[in-house]
Amino acid sequence: MKDEELMLNYQKGDMQAMNELLSRYKNPIYNFAYRLSQNYAEAQDITQEVFFKIHQCRDTYTPCGKFCTWIFSIAHNLFVSRLRKKKWLVFWPRKQDDPEELVDFESPDPSPADIVSTNDISNKVKMSIQGLPFLQKEALILREYQNLDYRGIARILKKSQGTVKTLIHRARQNLKVKLLPFLEEFSRPIDSNAWRDPANKNSNIAGKGGV
Image (tube, rainbow, N blue to C red; front, side, top):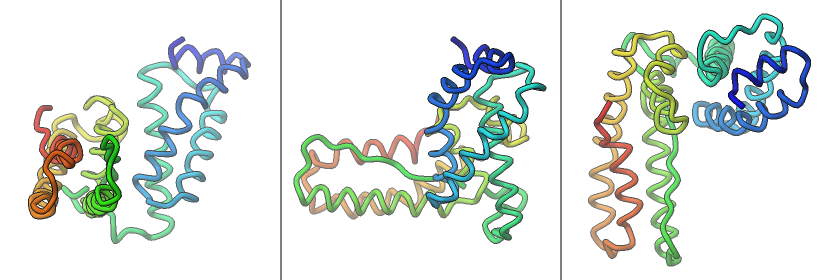
């Protein structure tokens, strides 16, 4: 059953429909919030608030777009509201600035040395993504980690699709500049076969160009 149908069923009093929506979106919303805040408690609070908002809005809900776009819009608005209240404005973008987050590296049967090295690269990726301007970071998270299309991201961020494409392109370029020198230097003393998967995965995110 589609998300929109579940929400309409919940609107009619079907509690099982909400349980299904919770099952589908609890982790994606939590991961989105955590990747923006890098704070477990903050991510949990936002996730709970998102589903409370859904409950509050159930009587007025109208399926005028994708449910996933609607729920991530709620999460986005809650996060921005918290940023302003907590005066995290030092991280807030000016005009064309932006933010985003971490990558999991999976290498089959890694050696202990590989595990240590992979952790080093993973930490570098996390730091690099967190260092992106806020809107770049958020747009990249929604695209790469939540698999939302440009139209949905534009609705969530209240930007044009062209602006969203520009934000994501700049985010990828910024990551490429930050990560490629590190990967090239880091891989020299290591067997290239051990790094084939992690290096490629980094390159996909840092260098993926298609829109």
